[in-house]
Image (tube, rainbow, N blue to C red; front, side, top):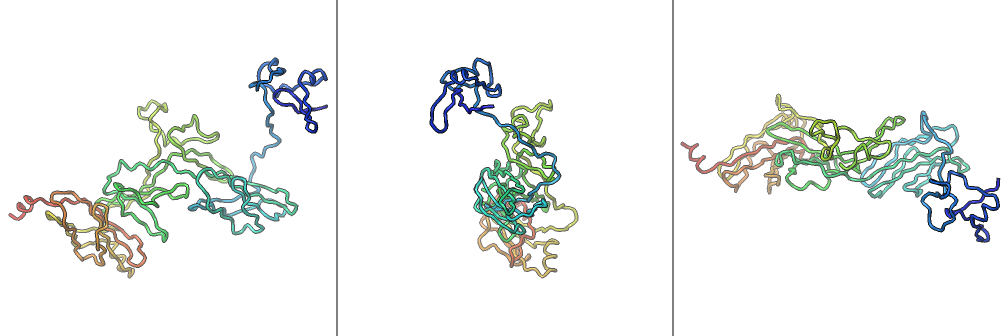
Amino acid sequence: MDVKFINVYNEYIDGETGVKTSWQELKAQGYKIPEAFFWGSENAMYSSGKGILDTIIPGYWISKYQLSEVTEYIVDYNYAVNMTNVELTNITINSDEEVTKCTYAINGEIKAELTDQSNGYTFTDVSEGKQIINVTALNENGEIIGSYTVTIELEEPARPDTSSFDQDTTFYVWWDESGNEHNETPISMEPPEKWYKYSNNIWANIVTRNNGLETYFVWIPRYEYRLNTLKERAEIKFIGTDITNENCTPSYQVPEAFWWDNNSNGIEEEGEQIPGYWITKYQLEEVSNELRIDANMQPSNNQIQIADITGSLIDIAKEDGTQIKFEYYLDGTLMKDAIGQSETENYIYKNLNEGTEYTINIILRNKVTNEYIGAITKKINTLTTSEIETNSL
């Protein structure tokens, strides 16, 4: 069989001389065009017009072979995103052939070639967006033994919705570089810079506190997923409310939890897709007096005095020999010179407005390490002059 490669005008151009042969000449020489290269009528297929024909295709891909239902990957690894780094760990090569080295590539660019895989590899300074990670194992001749590629979406979902929580007694939760928990900023204020970053596996957390009852929540942003049964894990992509099961990524699906059937008709309609939801992590119950602190708060018309602070968390800290300190916040702001050293200091919030509601937040920390131990949050109203006069009768 004599084969000549032609363009979408059905013309043959000699690669060495550049001489062009028209379709009429080719046809006269006995050449034919396989049906696979046209989409439509036979007349369109043999057209000699000079315009680009939508019905004629320049070529097509055909499967050579497919690796399916494998019991294990030849090259396998775990990956995690940490700040701007992508860390590859537990790199394994499941082959009897000797591996000389592995190449590590991101977005088609090889960043390293290593002979020892025991320490894994870290891609640094990775930007947001789609990142394609590849590890390829080679033998001594540079031939491929196996390869494994993953696509990571380093993108941030929409900001968590905190509108349904009490804005004064609900607080952002985040952790500093030393691993110490911080939860002093109420959600009525702008969130701390390090509150969350889903592309770096830092999830949004909040805590609600009211008179001793403390509950932690984590935000689950809207996502689509597919199951990797071989690795026994789910691969997810964060999406907006415009993505549903009808238009999500092929082989992915959107969990039903992100659809709220407002009218209970069983049909996914406009406005029923939700961007995410809060789920309870754990709750410190008010029952008994375990793992909590309390404070006696005595208001007047222009100040609130904090009497003795008590609770099992203070007792436990003292038994462990922990040096403790108290941080006094008023409506989310740390008071000047308000770092107490004792639970019996009787701290006073001064120069307040009478007949006004204030949110008092007292945080107990390790004085040496700054580790969070516990907190008490209450809403307290200062008294009016008439209330004080009535109480004095």
